[in-house]
Length: 90
Image 1 (cartoon, rainbow, N blue to C red):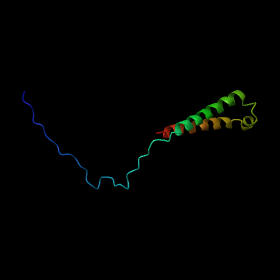
Image 2 (cartoon, helix red, strand yellow):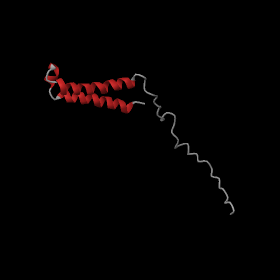
Image 3 (cartoon, rainbow, N blue to C red):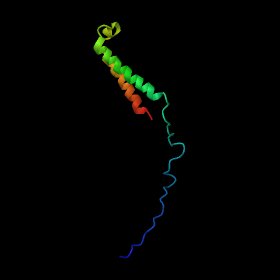
Image 4 (tube, one colour):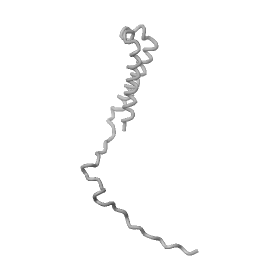
């Protein structure tokens, strides 16, 4: 069987008005600092511990007793903050 002829295509170069200028190119962000995952873990654990303590001893802790239902907002707020940190971790 005869081999078909290979066609060579010219390399595409976009016009200069389409290329982004150096002023509009976003700066790449580097990796997160070494302490960031530890801080994220601490915030997540604080939220979890706060909710567990609220369930187990919330009526015996004076500050938690006064806050009432806001204890859940504080605990889940800490958890959401930790998850927000996890999303931004590089």
